[in-house]
Length: 183
Image 1 (tube, rainbow, N blue to C red):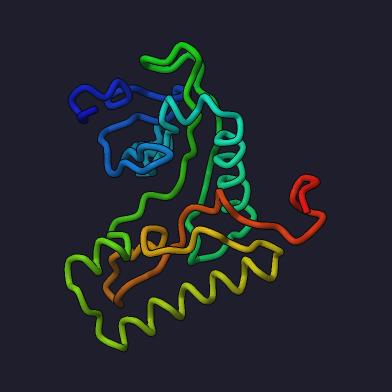
Image 2 (cartoon, rainbow, N blue to C red; image 1 turned 90 degrees about the vertical axis):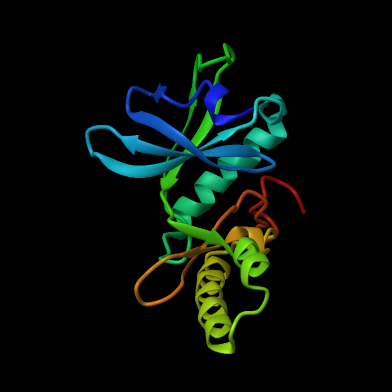
């Protein structure tokens, strides 16, 4: 589906989030650039793909992504502001699950590696150091991210160099006894 035919572009979710454009399309959902009305700030919204939202396990994973990111509260983890079901939603009478997060201006590490092929050692150290700080904080709170890959390491553009934000805590593992009864 192109941006021109996407029913969410131009729509206002929850009478609060005006969707302006598509910024990314992933396996679980599509990410949009949005203006939060009232606050007049730019945020991003990830909306689960319609077929993915048919499975309760996927919805639970999406909810876990929101809850875990909120619980981590770390400068190198994407900040999540809201998680809800818009019912009905454009083109979806059954509704659409969405997650509102900070808008990040930059690229995924995967895209950067495809573009430049080789990173200088000092840049690698900067990226890995920030990712390690976020992972240390996650581990200290009992979260073990299982989707750590270049697609989920976002490099935010800044005057001082890369600022890392880890994304996608939907497949996080909890220590025994915390994972909703799983061992």
